[in-house]
Amino acid sequence: MAVPTFTNAHIGDQGMQSLISIGEHYADKIVQPSLTIYSKSAFTAICSTAFVEKLTNEHKELAFDEFSHVDFYYTPEAVKASTDAVAEFFNA
Image 1 (spheres, rainbow, N blue to C red):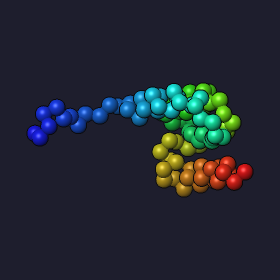
Image 2: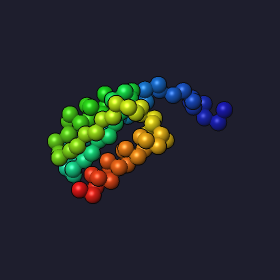
Image 3: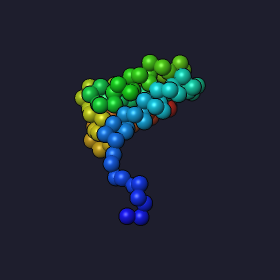
C-alpha cells in the first residue's frame, strides 16, 4: 500500500454534513436575490429548508412534491421544471 493511512471508507451522510456545514451557516451572508429549488421528498430537504429559513436576502423557494433529489439530474420533466424556473428567475 502506497499510503499506509489511506482508507476508501465513505461517510454515509457526507453530503448531508457538507450541506449543513456550508450552506446553512452562510445563508445570512448572501446579499443577492436567490432561488432555492429542491424536492420535498429528498433526503436533503431538511438542509434546503434550514438554508431557506436562514436567508435574509430577497429570495424565492420552489419545492417540488413530484420529483426526487436525483430526478433533477436526469429526468426530463424535473430538469425542465427546474431550469424553466431558473430562466424565469434570471429573466425577471
